[in-house]
Amino acid sequence: MITYKDSGVDIEKGERLVERIKKMVGKLPSDGIVSSIGGFSALFSLEKYGSDLILSSATDGVGTKLAVAQMADKHNTVGIDLVAMNVNDIITNGSSPAFFLDYISYAEVEDRVLEDIISGITEGLCQSNTALIGGETAQMPGMYKEGEYDLAGFCVGVARKDELIKNEIKEGDTVIGISSSGFHSNGFSLLRHLFFDVAGYSLETLLYGEPLAEILLKPTNIYVRVFEAIKPFVKAAAHITGGGFYENMPRVLSGKFDVVIEKKAMPDIDIFEVVKDVGKLSEKEMYRTFNMGVGFVVIASEEDSNGVVQTIEKEGYKAYILGYVKKGKGRVELV
Image 1 (cartoon, rainbow, N blue to C red):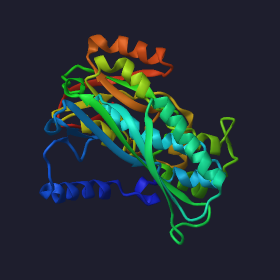
Image 2 (tube, rainbow, N blue to C red):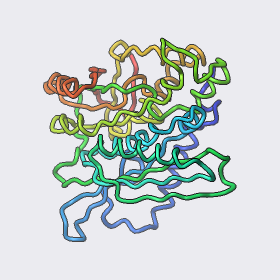
Image 3 (spheres, helix red, strand yellow):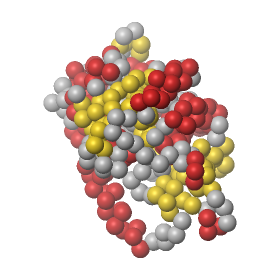
Image 4 (cartoon, rainbow, N blue to C red):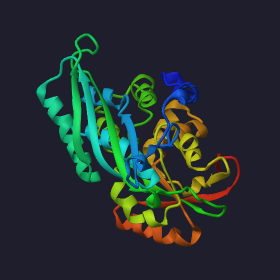
């Protein structure tokens, strides 16, 4: 049985680093910080500057999905991924993305590649109604092979204090999933290992009638507009990224509640079954690494749940009533 760690990604190591960072930053200025390390995005109050606004900030990249884009010489979707990974984190606390900055580093790439990347970033910003306020392009000879590049994004959102989601969930609340477009931008070190090394597939290999390159490079869904439509009824929200359900859902449970996910309620997505079979992955490893067809999760009261589902589907996504909240210690239970 293969695990994510076998492909070179140690999730526990990342968790240990976060805990060490929390200790290190204790001596830094903290006036204005509402929430910082550990959430999907950090909150900073402008009260000391005479404003009632709260800033929300996030930074992220696309990860080794970039390696697939470079293998396929297809670069016009990874910019969408870059925006999505940031704005989807921003909205989890109820703020709205306001502006974005990008960072592109490389040694030697063609002009068309950079243009394709920027076109994807522009498309993602259009989808999320977010401004591009600046960025940095760094040419770094010796750091990358010819044709290789890396991306990072930085996003700031804005909200008033009373607009923020308080995570005031209670026992019996409903857990609702919003459909993903596929793998989004997580688990690609494992995916590349399984598809190319273990299974011996190529980018042209057809799976369910679609080339593997197209499956892997589907851009991450951007949930800004659908979330805005359901926000008045949302008690908590989680972006299902690296770490899957087991790492992301506890971030909104305050250590006081568990969520019960009913497997029969999850979408049945063929490509995730292919991954499980190729790698002989355990159920826990799958739910700990991938979004399993659900890219964003919200918690709403039981009486609001049907209306939330209808609104999500009206916005063009599939919605799934996945389970419920119960008292606990911040864990995810699959049944």
